[in-house]
Image (cartoon, rainbow, N blue to C red):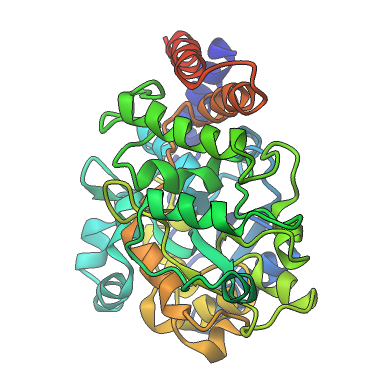
Amino acid sequence: RKMMKKAIALSLIATMSMSAATIVHAEDEVTLRVLNWGNTDEEKIANDAIARFNEENPNVKVEQTCVPVESWSDFIQKWITMCTSGEAPDVISLGLEAVNMAVSNDLLVPLDDIITDDEELTAKKDQYAPSLLEGFTVNDSLYGLPNGTQTMVVYYNKHMFDDSGLEYPQDGWTWDQFRETAEKLTKDGVYGFCFPCTYFQLTPWWSTNSTALVDENQNPALNSKKMVESVEFLDKLVKEKVTPDPISSDVYTMFSSKQLAMVGAGRWVLNTWQDAGLTNADFDCVQWPVNEKEGSVFGGAAWCISKNTENKELSIELLKSLVSEETLKAVAAGGQQVPPTESLATDTEIMGTTPDNIEGIWKAVTIADPIAAPSYCGDLEQTFLRELEEVFSGAKEPQAAMDEAQAQIESAIQ
């Protein structure tokens, strides 16, 4: 596997370098290629942005390739195939999980100087949440402008709190207060909380404990003291049956069917809950409980420029259309992503279905840490979740499981 990954990276570098051999003159017909990922709705949003770009640049042909992402290795393989066939992309939508890999292989153009020299992009950058820009910054250079994000807050059922005589939770509540609340809400076939055993949804627990799966140098830190402490906290919730089985439970359906009093999620569940009959009278949201600091998690995608584009200036103009206000509004209207700017993310007309505390979702973005996304992200996620399942099933204690996960990842990346 390690040899294959290295070969893929080297092949990508070589083929993209060869693609830069031809210089296209401004008066010639130009083709720009866009590599995107997502569903048909997201493909259409990008096509609409391309059409607006073509209004100003009618002689530029833009070809979009949009692929679903089941794993980022599949996406990279698609990138490689385009390069080897002489169709290397100029502008690329990258998930946060793939940015470190792309930068480590010198595949992307740093955007700092481009933004500084462009008033429109400078104004756009100033509107972004600093946390999002930091997530797409590597070695002090910015490589992508976000088009949407996801984060996590705690949603709670108001009626269950009312029936139990409990006050609604407030920002700044602690892990201990959260656990006590969940215990009081666990009764009559209802659980106080449930967390899915998934990489993204669990990350706020690490963030609010001032830790992460990787350290500041992107080295694995799965068995650090604070990480083990976090896993022990979650394991206690499972053992005390405050939460149902996190491995197999459909937590979002359980919340909409009133089997859970609280659950963690982002924006992506809101339209589904509305379809299930939940209204703002039924639920609201609050920030994640705190152990050491306020925090959450964010992921998402950003538009980037290929290092070897033959048409840098036109690629910049296309990038501007892909992150324009009109495009970001269209992404927001899809009902999944949280827009990357406060003005859009807190606009109820643009956002549509939202809880009363719509500002809370944006606040979560501003205090969030990026999802752990080192170059070995795939191995990290699979190994970590496998060992977590050993903990929640009762097969291993948290310290032993995290020690084993750390050893496996260190072996894989060597």
